[in-house]
Image 1 (cartoon, rainbow, N blue to C red):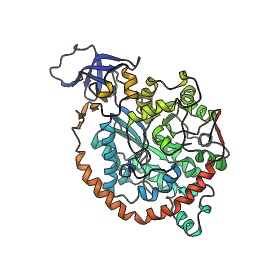
Image 2: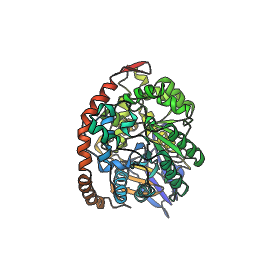
Image 3: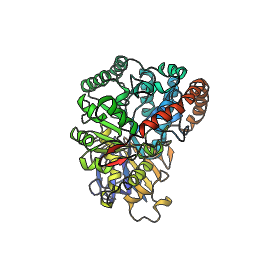
Image 4: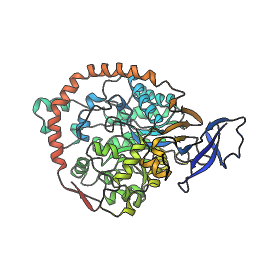
Length: 494
């Protein structure tokens, strides 16, 4: 039994911080009571004096394989990032897959994030050992994850019409030699994984992650749809992340990516769109009508030059909004406080009145309750409320960004940067105290990471050199295709 007492607790109804004590038994909040009304005797006591108490943040979109490749890029678009995938996350051992996931899980925990939707990728198809290694990393660090193996049966060069033809013949042959496994193999691996899932689904649960619609054949998408329905697992896909994706959808399908997914029967309450930058009003209506979620990733969208998603239009249409960091390969950090701050600011650059900007309570809700729904944990995490899991974060009011304390919700969203995180509790277990890990040895990962990065640099050197030769052609072709005017949501993004 645990008592978290003396703090100012976020009320999920009013989104105001109020003095209260939280009573925890096993892994759940059993009551939230007036300060001092429950004695400390016989309970593990967590002193929340001079702390703001919030639910654990939920990262709506992430990629475990990228944590060993953070900081590798600067002026890359999404398409250049994808073109470099053959070396940035390739040739990993099972131990390195575990290591990469553990590094990311520790970073999220240290910054107050207690759950994530992870699209972990392996090439040419998911493996049982690889996915289990990542799941074990989350279990060992102690945070929750919805883990969706990221899959495709078309390579990047096959997915974009005309791209391979834009390469000179020697490079074209090498590009077309990059092949994903046939879709039936990937679906079979997922079936085996999910039916023999050995992890507690209240902590780490499986989902499906066919990566981008036009990187997957319709037969693959239908196979994933049927498996998802059969085994009752969720989905996450990159949808309309970049303008080029929206244009390719019109060329390949004669309609938007969302409309095509709807025609194939994939849209459902457990379906989560990652990014959704280039959606139109019809797309948002379809997603809302099917009870889908969108994970908004403003940091990654801006770094890759993908555009600025219209989150107000999403909320106005009734889409569940989550927030994410994306992987460390595109956003370079897994800081959900930064994601909240950027989400608030991005909502203000559209040409509209101030009352249509996202409010700080709306942003904080997206980073907690909205993310919980996207991960399939609705009603279990994302709120400090009786009956919910005891995933609790204490923020130190002595941190400089709370001095003076004027409006706590505004300051959590606009001022907190992760350095104010003092204590993190997951499932009723204190995993971080005074900024230090209590149940996992993060320091032991540092030397292992250095050794892994050195080995990977050596074994991927030829692949990296080949990608560098292809990059100018990819950049020129994709940027040219993306210059096509494309109208979204009543205004034109160029």
